[in-house]
Length: 262
Image (tube, rainbow, N blue to C red; front, side, top):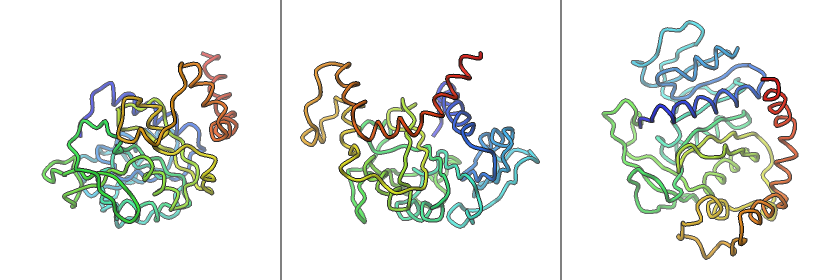
C-alpha cells in the first residue's frame, strides 16, 4: 500500500523520535522491505537484523544483517526491540497472535491499520474469532507490498487490538497521536501487567473521542461534554490519563529541553 511523501516523512519522523527514547541495542525489523527503516536504525547505533520473505528490495548496506526468511518462522529471541512497520495488517489473526507470542517480553513497535470504521480500503463485514473482532482485507498476492502467502489478512478493531496485546503480556500501550492516517498510527507496546478494567478507556470510548461522527457504537458512549475545554479537562482528570502523564513526564521534559536548545 503506497503512501504519499508527506505521509512517509511523518512515519519516518515518528520512528526516529521513538528510537531516540531507547538505548541502542539489538533491533529486529520485521517485513523490512525496502530497508529504509533498518538503515535509519543502524545510523542511530542499533545492531539491526532486517527480515523479509522478499529480498528484491533489500539495499546493499553492510551495517545491517539482511535475512531472507518468512517472519512467521524467524527466531525473535535475544532482541532489545522488535519493529513491525506496515506488516501486522498483512497477517492472518492466527499469525498475528503467534507473532505477539514470540515477541512477548520484548518492547514492540507496531505501525498498522486498524478497523476503526474510517478506512479508505475495502474491508469485509465485521467478523469475530477466538474473542477478537475486526474485518478482513483481500490481499493482492502479485504485489510486492502484499502479504507473503495468505489471501486475506485480519484488521482488528481497536479494542480487540488492545486485547491481543494484553493477552500476550503487553500491558502498556502508547499510541502516537494524532494518527497519520484516519485508521493507522504507531503503537509502542511494552511488557507489563494490563490496567484494571475500571481504570482505563474502552476502545469504543477512545474512538468516540477521536471520531465523534461515528455512530456504530454510540449507545455505548456517555454523552460528551459541551465544549472542547470540557473534553480536555475531563480527559486530564481520568486516572488512566494521569498515570500515562506521570510515566512519560521524564521523556516530555527531555523533549522540551531539546526544543529549547534549538
